[in-house]
Length: 374
Image (tube, rainbow, N blue to C red; front, side, top):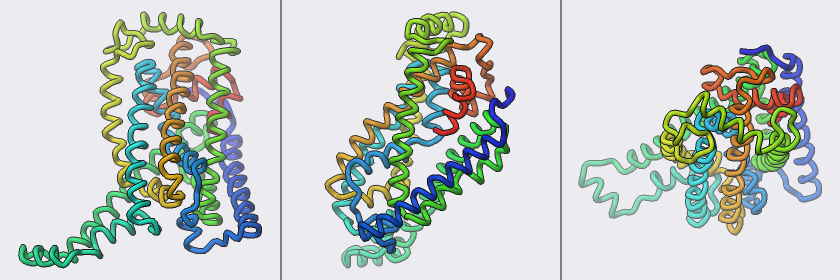
């Protein structure tokens, strides 16, 4: 691993400082909403935001929920390894599930408009409301209908918990790996400090504070995506134009051709491994059927805003991994061999560090801060 470009103090400062900033901002906003909009933090407001979230906030919540560490790191690494096909199939493989999830969200709003949690819905579906004819048929088969209902509820709890743990590990380990690579701070400290700010503002403002933070997060992400795009393709001293990136990628294909890509090129969609990864990813992301946080945000949505919110959110989200990957993933490959660019090892690839190292080479210290803020 190369020497860290920022100090450990900078890493701790960004983690603690921005966590505290968001926590204080959401606390202040919750106080103002309670004062001027009478949004008192009762259990209904805390859990469901009174089912009143409109289209724009629903869309930003979808984008922010889907933009985890893997969105930024894995998509760029796939593009670095497999070329533009890696970026496309990563984005396409996860966008389909957002659209399909919109159907589940609409059915949830239609069948259980007053639900507070997804698991509450599972308990009612599998545990409480059992038709008398079903009870007779189950008794005749020597089955206990109450046990079956409880078992169904427990299955959903177990799978949802496992999925949430895996998702949290993905976010925390991926985020802390970037902080460690760029600042040299402890991985363990990063894992523990990353969620502190989130916990505080969620405790103070409930699901509404989370959704408002999602909006802020989405604005920051898009601003940085656009900034990175223009830096790489217009005014970078190392690249600076699409023509230079194209020429260097053609040269890179001769030095390190991609196995399975037509002609070994990085600028082709004819990629066997890219398609295979896309299919695997497409199947894996169907785990969202038990993702509690996505269902919880669907519960908070105003019924009329659910469909447009998820459609707009899905289309908007695709641009983040695709644009980031085709910017920093391709830039990392194009700059391989330059003295300013670190040689990316197999370990770096496994940790998804193509994007941080590309940003560091292109923007120096500012690039490191750029990645940490994202």
